[in-house]
Image (cartoon, rainbow, N blue to C red; front, side):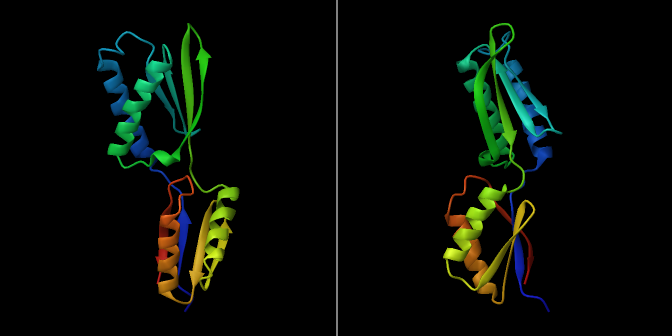
Length: 165
């Protein structure tokens, strides 16, 4: 029998994001302070990007607040959002791009593996593509790794999957 193991991943449910965007778009179109303005939210599922548009910075902030509330309600971690700068767009409007982070990039993965190694637990952590596989002889050590990762903030939402005891 192989050693107990689990994977550390960073995934977001794109269907929940799409649902949150639809709800946010509906609220934006109905809000009195945003009615008749350029305020809108576009979601490119293939590129995993959101684009907010509005007449000014205040409008972008209002649209973003609506979007964040809908994402939170649908249990989508806001840490998965990587905000671009607010930039001028056509017809005196502004826009902001938001990239959805899916997977753990290699620099972050190395940082996580280093944190696991520094904890001096009897486990192995290996980067496999955009996730990390952690294995060890004792389930208690694996539980300790999960606790350790939950305590630290690596700036992205992390989940623990494929637990094999």
